[in-house]
Image 1 (spheres, helix red, strand yellow):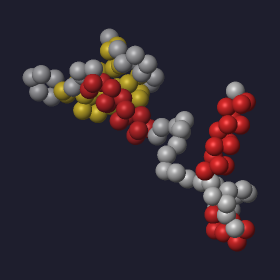
Image 2 (spheres, one colour; image 1 turned 90 degrees about the horizontal axis):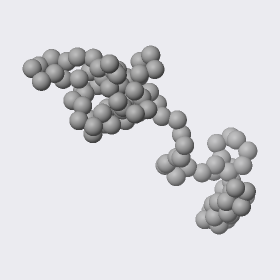
Image 3 (cartoon, helix red, strand yellow; image 1 turned 180 degrees about the vertical axis):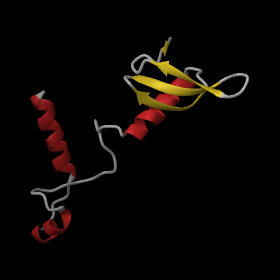
Image 4 (tube, helix red, strand yellow; image 1 turned 90 degrees about the vertical axis):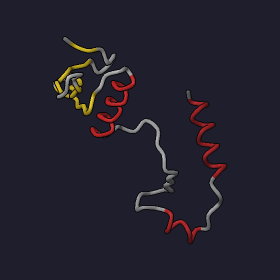
Length: 101
């Protein structure tokens, strides 16, 4: 595990151009050291809205006619269109997306 971290750090340092000392004051946000942002992240936490959108897409991919979803009491609560019109609440397992009875 340690060699991977060292290799990753070396790659990052190799891609960063050398900056003059005067430029360093403009490249930091008040925290010590240099901070870089490339517009993407790994392993960040999803917001509640992001999680709901993801769950909605997963259920729709599985053929559920859900219009909106939310995490509720350890389950996914989905509002699903009924064939004859209207909506009903259905509950799904958040890990397997299996419908709960």
